[in-house]
Amino acid sequence: SRTKNSTTMHGILKHNLFCKHMTVQYDSRLRERKYGAAEGKPLSDLRNMAKEAGEECPFFTPPGGETLDQVEMRGKQFFEFLCQLILKEADQKQQFSPGAPSNNLETSLAEIFPLETNYSSEVNSDSGAPGLVASVSVVSHGAYMRSLFGYFLTDLKFSLPASLRKFELSSVSPNTGISLFIISFEKGKEPIPKCVCMNLQDHLNEVTKTLSV
Image (cartoon, rainbow, N blue to C red):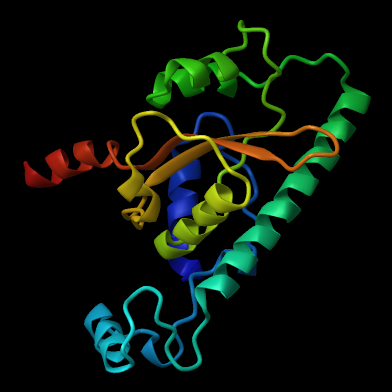
């Protein structure tokens, strides 16, 4: 729901050192999959409906619900819109501040996320690689993000860290799970996503420890 996403996003901004006062933008294309007749019901009800129809979750589409292809199309449209928005703003920044230093978020990524060697070099400002022109935090739902990552994998052929196991590609992110991608742009070509980490939940360990004390 939008309420849950809003709560998560404002929680992120509250503890963020770089964009604490940034305005949140809402986009209906980030909403969770519509489940029609199964909306708001327990997962067991959805599974029973799928079983009666001779199908399996999550491929089953309840009456009045969205198909997986429709959800993926929403994700594709949002991603393409986001890429165009970033490129437009990057051009404007270059016009008004040519040669401006990139955000120090670049170097902080390597300190926060378990980047592998080939990825850490891309976000290290001393490597000579192009700096990040934008840092975007997208908050949505687990099943929706799984569909979006499927588009990254099948259509855009994104590259994976060696540590990422195949079953993780089809798993739903845990609540507040984090996935990080570096998107490379080149004129006349499709954007190239590179996966740094997917469905990361290490940050939840400290919360669990606190609750158990």
